[in-house]
Image 1 (cartoon, rainbow, N blue to C red):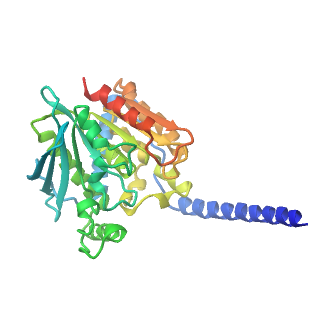
Image 2 (image 1 turned 60 degrees about the vertical axis):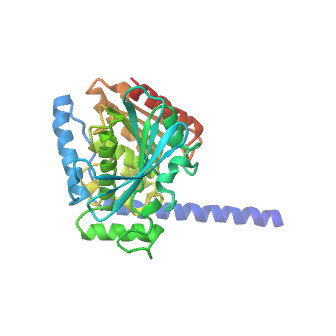
Length: 364
């Protein structure tokens, strides 16, 4: 009798969950249906037409990011310390972003190099690790090994900064020292919206200033610079590739999908407030932004089970982006790999893929 009761109860529970899921899906569909979102992206047939369209998209993105303060050509940097760590020299620096904040960062300078070295801007993730930030270079909170020293040992000059609200900038938002972690991040977003700009735009601006600094260093070959990161760091990576011509190569791990697929699969919960640019879906979706990176080498590595990056959205984007690269005859410069039975994680196999990509694209 107990087994019969259990079976019946389980069936009722499953039916209830199914009905609840169907109700939730209907609610989501209704929100999307009445939102009047961007139509499907159409890639121009010729390189010349795409170049014109490319400029229009980039201009519109800058407008959507808000009224960002102009940044100096090269940030005024203060070197705070210099330390010999065996295979490399570690410099700690900071620069004034000319928008109310000092931006601390690290620069790893390899010792065993001949001539100018390739540079890599490493973008840390979010993960709720507000106290980590740029220290991710030396930890395994996001990567399978400490990535900074490994890249330096391979001959790259590595740069990383704390994004708004992270590392040494946690508790240094507009809410002051009393607001830390998520509360500080939310206040920073509110402040920027009132100022006519976005938190994401200000983050991209800081990353561009870090790129300016990396490219200005005499040890760096500014024509061989890459960017990389996982999660929030991945999003920072493909936005930089889209908005600036200098990065020759990029590797983004996780956090790449169509925004509309993210909504339809109820995945907005997986991303913080920094991720959202007001009005972007009135114009275009992620495939249009990512296509701006062509013809520069760009590798995406994603987990099949990552709820924050629905695979359906990735598969929809890939043909558009490949077509953009094809206009330049650069099909080999773009790749997107889905790792089966893998979630939101940086696996050792992905790390080896990152190293191989940069070795191929930046060492020749």
